[in-house]
Amino acid sequence: MNRRGFTLIEVMIVLAIIGGLVVIGAPRLFKAQTNIRATTRQFMALTKDIRNKARIYNSTYRLVINIDGDKAGQYWVERANGPTPIDPEAAEKERDRMKSSFKDEDAPPPKYAMDTTVLKKEAQLPGSFKFVQVETVSVKDPITSGTAYIHFFPEGFVEASAIQISGANNSIWTLVFNPLTGQADIIEKAQSLKGLQR
Image 1 (spheres, rainbow, N blue to C red):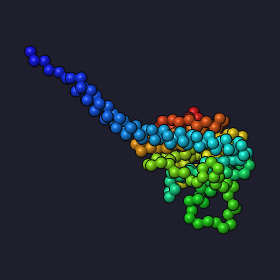
Image 2 (cartoon, rainbow, N blue to C red; image 1 turned 90 degrees about the vertical axis):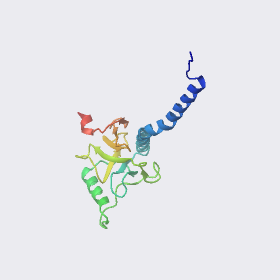
Image 3 (cartoon, rainbow, N blue to C red; image 1 turned 135 degrees about the vertical axis):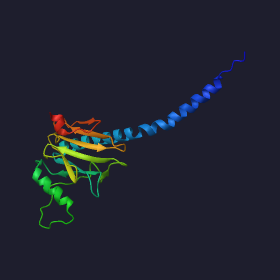
Image 4 (tube, rainbow, N blue to C red; image 1 turned 90 degrees about the horizontal axis):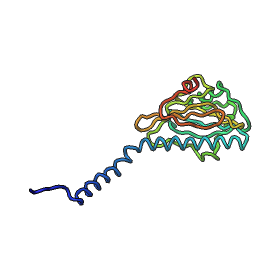
């Protein structure tokens, strides 16, 4: 009887080919998931730094998020000297002023100015990532266009808020800020702030 099977060398060659395909293909499969995870973790580290600066310098900071328009996906940090209460109507007027192309000569100077100690300049979400919406307790409806603000106070409190970020494969992750601890939690789906408060 002539018995024929695979030799050890043939089996090892096939395993090496399969291993090579896994090494080349696996990162591409998980790249989008890894990128959105890295982006949200980067955002968490940024907000922790902003909260610490607000406490150290006894100032109100705010994270400015541009959702759409020419600066879509950009974000930066602004600072007001001393404790500054949130005024939803003033924030709405400022959002409208930023949308308009002209400057009002009689308008008072803004309370907030860009702070370059946290971010040197405006930062941009990587690649095809974008902000979907921002929800805060001081604004009645979720902000899906224009500019959104999240405030960080000298006492260590953070405005309760939720930021939704979408990735390349249309997956949406939500960063939720606890107002008392300032801790940001990642939820791997679209989650509204109102839904979390129930």
